Length: 130
Image (cartoon, rainbow, N blue to C red; front, side, top):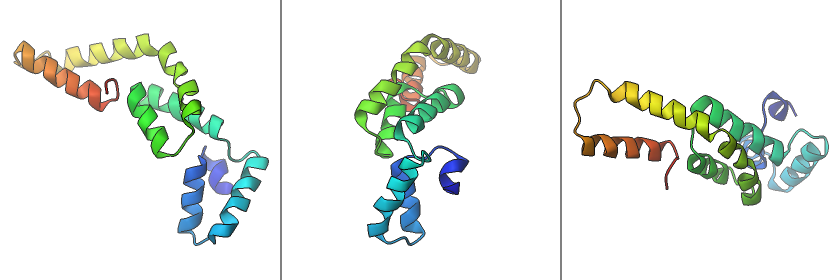
């Protein structure tokens, strides 16, 4: 309960932690059910907090957020529902990245082709393109 109360966790993280601590696999489902009933563990709340944090703090794009949540084995319908929040904050993120890229590469002497390639690669790494 302390592990889940400290910060939001998904079911996958709790299962992994219990396995690392040496919990027998047959008891893991009972523990997870108990944590869910007592409202210590809730996937929807985890996905909401995760998406909000990655948008506001890390400035991640929708694809990177989606891949990270899929790696945590969060339900895909829940992921799509939470990514609607990304669309609401898109103008702020776009302005942030345009300003940051303009400032970062203003002093470098790249030709236009190289600059566009670097910008595309950087935005792909941040999860804005497939």
